[in-house]
Length: 158
Ligand SMILES: [Zn+2]
Image (cartoon, rainbow, N blue to C red; front, top):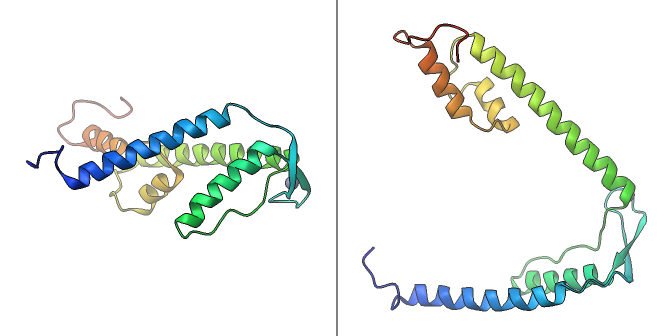
């Protein structure tokens, strides 16, 4: 790209947008430093439909966000909250699912380190990716290097 950035109309328009966004952020920052915890509404819990008291600041933030969504032609947010007991239950469930995924990842890694290196598109590799293994490609590369005929490392060495 050899175009002059300063005179490129797309760049100028983008810089202008960034400046306006920054101005909006500073205005939001000013108003969000004062949190009004007075209950301004009650919204149904997303899960159990119990009425949840909602502080004024949250209602105002929802209003601001919905104005932005409407301006973009998108559907506004529904008035829902999460009650404290449903929040605790869902958080525990999220942690449990994370532990289950880590345990399954460890099982799959054990299987592929003990057997032959599976192809990148095999079901076991796809499942590892789906479970969120942080470095499937690095794992396969390491196993291929370790198991290649010219490797000086023995089985079980890392
Ligand atoms: Zn609830």
